[in-house]
Length: 141
Image (cartoon, rainbow, N blue to C red; front, side, top):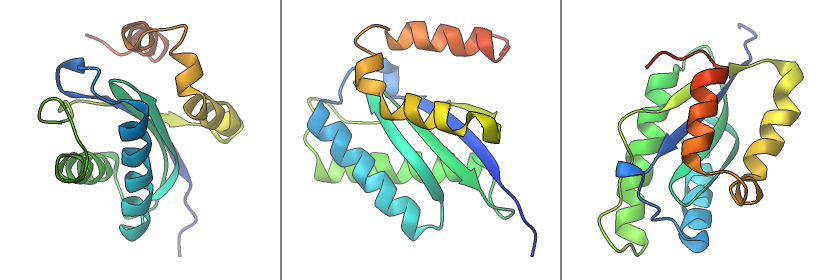
């Protein structure tokens, strides 16, 4: 049996970055994603976000890849959200997402960052956070 620990920090936004998630819907959606991930053997370390996006911290196994895990989480959570929560318009996620590897030494920093999303976004918009991700992780646009 291989010993693998691949930590990945992912971020994705609502369709058109619409600020649709009030606290109750966001919390219900995160709870559901935790439960769904457990049923699908996705080792979800943390999930949280704010009005228009979510962050997810995942440890991948040797049989998983980022694209499959993201498609499972995003697709099923969007379906569940439309069926079980109340929205002003149809809820959906954008197709794209960020995914970056996390070293073991950064585990606590990333986990704490995700936990503190509500406080974090009192000072910084998602667009500012997005721009920082592009710059800090050297993504090309």
